[in-house]
Image 1: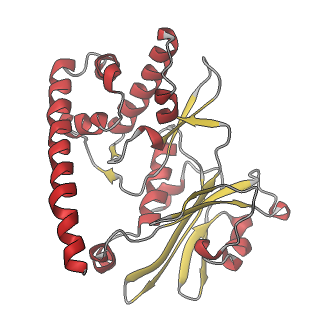
Image 2: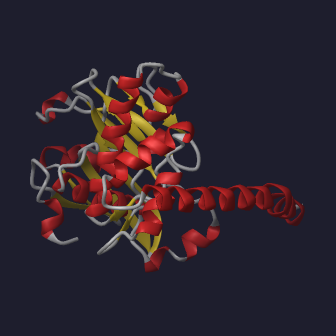
Length: 279
């Protein structure tokens, strides 16, 4: 990874190696990461949050106070496999942890909110990824945009503020060359009171880095945000005179219909077929 990828971090990452495990970590956390067992083998503390268990393992972990870092908690994400094909192609690609780390550095370099990465590591054997993990700061006292949407807010001024904030973030993210590819509202954390809100985008391992994000990909991204009845206003705010809102909405509707058909085919044909083949 080029040194410029680390420029937005408030610290200089240190390379470390422990057996086949290699990575980049905060210099004060080298020993902590070297001694850390696999995330799926960590004991579950009752006051620590477990976010996910399959196929990825995502847990909160307490950082050692003697490390002298400004973060008390970290979120550790161990990436699993959704299919054997991903494992077989792993020698040809960056690990998912390294992709997420690189994207986080890119977003921070463009003043876009995302949890600060504290460390990343991977283990390969014959090029095949055996283990890969990303650690970031833990964002607290947040609400996901999905939770906000499902709360059915009725204050139009408040809704408009959140839509404007989200549209501005996504426009700047796309302008920077990032196509997130999983921009569901659950992957956007909102912190702070009205008038001082900030957004943090998470789940970065699927993102593509492009020299330019075309309108088609932008529309596909917006269509995944689930704003539904607020789409016209959201798209208007996103386009901001640069794109034709009506054309963007047309592409979004077409993409959502295609996803509906694809989902029906997967659920009614592909999944039952896979179950039969496994018997």
